[in-house]
Image (cartoon, rainbow, N blue to C red; front, side, top):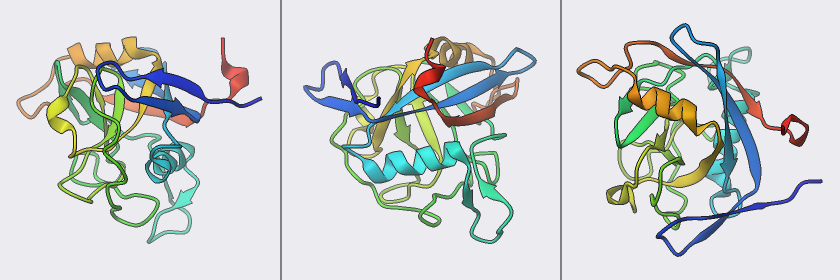
Length: 195
């Protein structure tokens, strides 16, 4: 039986319903992969949540290839800034300069209703207004200066300790992790997976 989970966003006065769950298995350097489960806010931002979910499933063909699929699987987290966020989702170039959405290269900002009010929120990375693709970030602190500029579409439900490990890892001068942080698997989190 499927049902929504309510998440109260501290300090925002808003309440968002988790409509679906997806997961990443993240490998940091040579460590054993760990699972992070995300809840998506499909009622508030359905198009953005669907884009992320489809990229987790990996069943949407690339525009220029019938065989190659768009997927986060095998992609890296390319940017980590302590007390701010961890960023990934560039499965085309792997360095923060690429990424595409299931709707085409970019798609418009859907809603800024949900605020960046706590750590563990899932939000779209962009290069300005209406330039959402596949890149995303996970907040590791409150980031109110991002409100009105980035679309929040979900949150970490389980496995935030893995995000903390990523955040505290060593980075170079461009905020790139020195140890590869790779999404080795991803998909829809089924209820039977619950512990």
